[in-house]
Length: 376
Image (cartoon, rainbow, N blue to C red):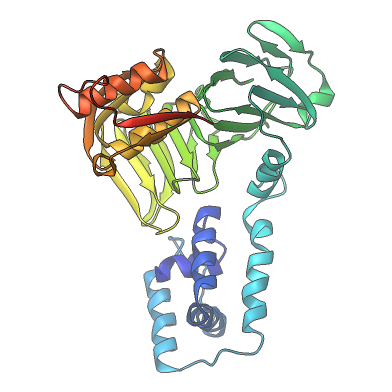
């Protein structure tokens, strides 16, 4: 664990994502709990002066604390476990100001909505509207009025403005959402978005579970924040893709235009166009690299574009897009890397045959069957 990050946690200067990382480390072993309590005790005992600080964490402060721990073997006090539990209990209070929605509230909203086969819009926290079309456009105006495919579905009113709304897009479908500030959100299959009918005066914030492409309206005075279970992305106005896959334990962000900021393992970073940031919450490892952003946003046009992508990941995306289960009969092919384009307007069978021909030149489905398609 990065000592600087632990000190930022103790001083309440870290982000919610960093706090979660520290808490996972604390709870991993008894030794980690002991080290944390020692650092907390030494931090308090040596009386670090913050008055002239220009950085959030002064490297000299960290050296002082670690030197003191090495010199003096602090014993884990009987109440140490209580200290750790207290840190967990007050985490949301520390990192969620009263005027902000916290992650627990977002997740509670999603947990209360039953998954259905149709696109589901939940407004005013409880009113559900099921939408049977494969692709839907939902638009909000500045008064909170909701239009579905240009038809008024929910009239505006002050009583609608203080509630969180949710749109759930099941596997096999996609949706477009135009928020009250004019920002456009393309939601991929198997994705959900929690958002207010009208944003607060000082901040625009949404919560994403799944994958979405954002075209954010530029507002210099109100940043736009995409919260997820793993990371948060902050922007003022730009185009980018965010994917949160809990099944594969992966967070991904790809920038198309403008700039986005997020917390990496080494601190806050800003992505530039055609940069990719990936984070594995299980291992704690992250990655920053240059990519072709078009590979990551082609789904909004009904296509999947791959560049040296392992077959198992391609299959996973096709399963979400078509709401089917695909079994590759020879597992040796799963790690093969492929490049190409797939048209999602084709049937699953047609798409899989194209994929097999990309994978194996000369493939003939009549002579050799390498996959099975099952309905979910």
